[in-house]
Amino acid sequence: MTIEDEEIDLLLNDVFEIYGYDFTSYSRASLKRRIIRLCALDKFPSFAELRYRIRSEEDYLKRFVEEITVNVTEMFRDPSFYKVLRTDILPILGTKPFIRIWHAGCSTGEEVFSMAIMLHEANLLKKSLLYATDLNPSVLEKVRKGIFPLTQMKQYSENYIASGGTKDFSTYYTANYGQAKLNQELSEKIIISTHNLVSDGSFNEFDLILCRNVLIYFDKDLQERALKLFDDSLGTLGFLALGSKETLKFSTIQSRFRQLDKEKIWKKMI
Image (cartoon, rainbow, N blue to C red):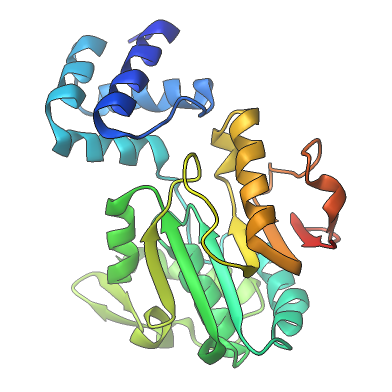
């Protein structure tokens, strides 16, 4: 199926006018790929059928938002990144009386739980709060449940060890009926809320903000808006972590930050 840019514009306008979700600043190439994939998955004979379904069924909108926004992720993905967090960042955060961390665009929560495990191992979880936000309520429900397919645990365990983890990873979850439920002590420190990087503002001051592999789906203006929001939400000497293909270069906040060696982590200097 081929979809014209004008058709995408019409669909995005529908979604915004009827439901208030604004995807107009998302990367067009990425949007088009995901919409074509959705049409194939749900066997729409034409783009008009998809548009009609979204306009007439609010329940189907949830499916649309999920396909457009959900990013595939895993626990301790990019172990070298987590190793730097573990060895270089957490010891600095540990000197603070209280630690606030924001996982912006947290998707299904693998990254949040990875952070909770590292904080637990550094004896910092008790004085930490992790804010997990996403614009999609259905993925936040998965974070709330803290349940993942048991088949993924082997990969997560390998990632965990590669990130510097030294414990038996299986002590962090209970296996049951092909599912792995993560321990309650990890969930207790996670605050879950909807937040839209397109339209919502700052809601707290943080010591560390992670927004990895989200900005690549935004156009330049929306990237700039999100980065300014993170700048406004970070305390002085706080840290900002982005995905491997994302950068502060060419942004208006670049001069206020210094990049750490190796990984996509910046320290706010002003």
